Length: 268
Image (tube, rainbow, N blue to C red):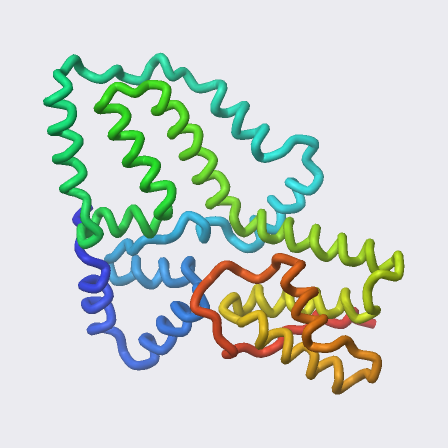
């Protein structure tokens, strides 16, 4: 595999696309449809980085979220069982070198790491900044013979990769928990009757438009409620519900380029 700068690969690929293909590709990029973009990359002979958090399909994420909700053990317990079964004694011990040689090698490796390196950029985009930084720290610990630190870093690496891969499922599970909790409170008379509907509209809209801003979404949902009912909550209340739900995707930048997505009505 030959690594080249991502900008160079995109320039080559876009140069052979027609206008329709370019529009389709840019729309996928805007909507963060990484899996579909990945297929286009491969048709042009490129393997651009696919974030590990996007490797799980939406349908698989729904299934995993359901399994997580019904599982008697937590993700941390699963990771601990996997990690404890690993044989760290098989890891090669660092060679016998002087402290000066070790420090010189560490400094050499540190200087080689640059963001402009295509391989560095690829790994950063694929496994994520945190996981890649941990992986590099593990290599430094390996060279310097810090075996206890190596084990701790490897455990943290596993946890980071595991959570990144299951990111979609974890978000779905958290959203369902938030909605369930709000519904529980609503039954006790603590919430406005519109709360469930507001949270469901927000969940569906943010799933389709993760860049939708909290204030913009609150404003649009409030306007929608006012067009249908008189006893509607204020925009501030709606924004507070959405903020407490923790459903707002952690993506930037935020914008108001979205349309509300409503739940499908049951078929008669």
